[in-house]
Image (tube, rainbow, N blue to C red; front, side, top):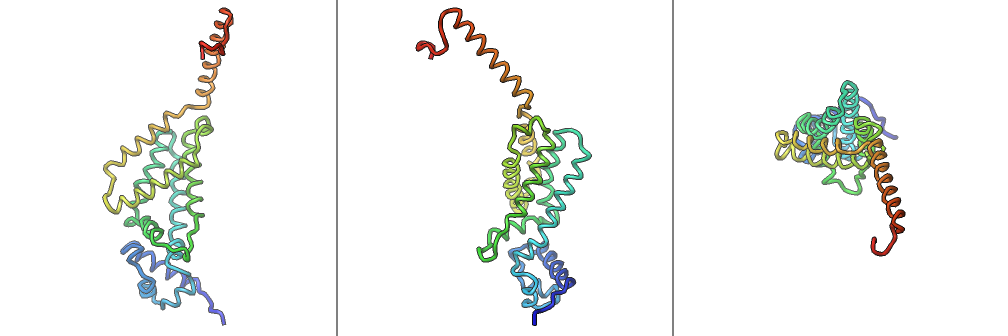
Length: 228
């Protein structure tokens, strides 16, 4: 007879795992420890979750998604582009890595020790990158966004998120964080708008047209051997 799974037992297991992950970290938390704190047997846990990695993702996935949804709500109250961008990078690189005793670092530990058999699902990363790409695109505006690969930028931002999450546990880079944020915001501010690109193209076109007219008056063309 198949075992009947109970939602309350599943929740107790997740609550126990969350407490242990926050207190000891993923690497130092065992399935046996989770079972003891949850008041169930280790074998009973496997009736609900295939692995410790699956338990972590059941906790981490909704937590991180809600955190980014909260960021989106917070951004709605900010008008200046600079401040929008700073809020995005400060949240991803400083606030989230520090929250709940560095809870985000649990995923770094998990992925560094995960096996092929446990299976790694990239859907959370893809969701987060798509969300951040939209947030950055909204912050910099349509005229700049059309010239910017926000998806690639979001991927780079999340790779930096992984690094800052690890660094928070090892060195706590909070004091230098504003320098890093200022650097990336300054780079994004220098991106030309669609209008500026059109204006530059028009100026270049006019310059080439005047030069061609000058060559024509002198009976020469831009392709003459001594001009190449």
